[in-house]
Length: 234
Length: 126
Ligand code: FES
Image 1 (tube, rainbow over the protein chains, first blue to last red):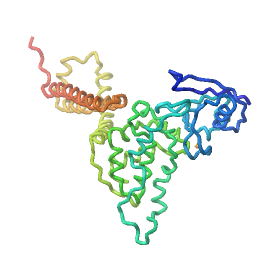
Image 2 (image 1 turned 180 degrees about the vertical axis):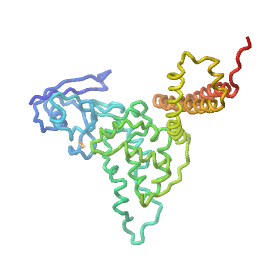
Image 3 (image 1 turned 90 degrees about the vertical axis):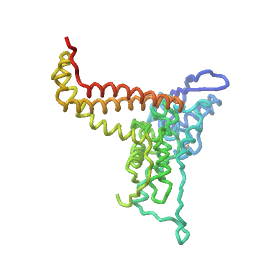
Image 4 (image 1 turned 90 degrees about the horizontal axis):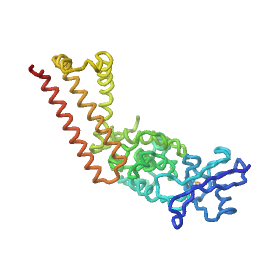
């Protein structure tokens, strides 16, 4: 089938404003949007720029707006979106070139919540792992699935309005450690998220939950963090 | 839930404001609804004059009611406005100025309202 791909292009050295360019590509309906972009880059216009790495929905590098929704190009099939496809860079982050955005503000927020295991407890006697029951592990299972693609944060209207908001992805990654029974920096993380630009900027729009390619219940995770701040219980 | 841990979190201004919004919202459901049904439907806006207010405020219960309405509704609204503005004001300095400005605005209007409720109605002598 012949697919029309309309791409929002931007070359900072030449263009004052981004503008759309349309390509026609021969494709199967089981092809991924990433395949179409590769085809265009390989056969029609080598200057087309986008990020990709694994091609299997794991590295999180090819998040973009496809027909108005944030998705991974490598997980979106032509048959899911039809033969008229519009591809744009993620909203809310500075554009670098074509579909590539500057992820620095996103990762700055991510670092702010200390997204790593912290424990001031002594190493267990046998010098091996810190044990955890299956129930305790289940408590934060959902938020371990994040691949930091930024689909959620850049779909959030609060983040569009003010990019100083830490955003859903940072809160999801804080949630992963806040509810981990082995971690001891819970209070510090909750205190950071209780600040003006923390969880209170979330207006439960649910855009993040819909955008997440890993199907994480993001709005629920944010609500659990709010609840933990209010009740002092995790 | 089993194995729940307790953590100490210092409540900051944002946490208190967030709780305030929830509690006042609950209080406002009966307060604002009853106020609206009474004033706009049963009495009717065109029949509200100084006389009516004098009769109404002759009973102290109505003064308490109006005081709660003023305290909750106006603070709820002004804090809501602050939340929306915080989304769009990107400079931290400006956010602080706007917050203080709104606080003063809220205080002045609330005080005028409180004076009226406490002072009651004095009919012009003519
Ligand atoms: S290329 Fe790695 S997630 Fe799509």
